[in-house]
Length: 297
Image (tube, helix red, strand yellow):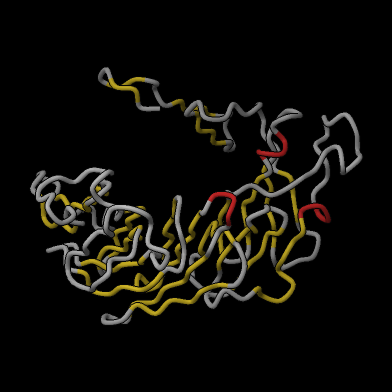
């Protein structure tokens, strides 16, 4: 959805479509079928597919799986047969109005999935967190100047969790989930703003032993900024075996400023419940499981 809600973008396997609130299609960018297969776009006839799309005020950002052998407004898929050893993913900037490719860059990755996070203060800057399964987690930081897409290839395997409200800070966790860090938009760790899970996290209180080898702790691949200096982080994945999931506030301005969040009632993840604890009694709002006959969970 565009920031002004005038455009929604739907990414399919072979095309990105921009749709207005009326339902009229405003633009389209796609990957045509291979030679001799005009009009047939299936997983068997093309190796180029769209992995992720994000709408910004300046256009679409799209990660395209499979590098086309030529440039142009409508990329051509790779040939059938064995995978091309030189094939990599591309990161594209696309005009939402007519589907033209405005800029493109080699992502130097082989994505199984990806996630865009934009700079709240500058829509021309965006982070691209790429998942390659067990093979790694490349992080790319892009800046579009209206003509070229300049990409920073951040060293290491990192998952991008959040961008601060100012856009000056990034929150990352390592692929093996042992290190949480705050970085600048060049991908460099800011002074002393990196936390090793085993050094700062305590074992779950309901775990049967305090032996770290028996009750390992690690950060989740989830979190974000509450403001430029406060992080919301979680350890649900490693806590799940022992009981109640834990969430933490991390004040980056002070040492040893990791605070466990307490809740007035036990959490029940993924049931659609939102809680607000104000001066008056706790208010619990639960999203209905079905709406107009549709499952909305």
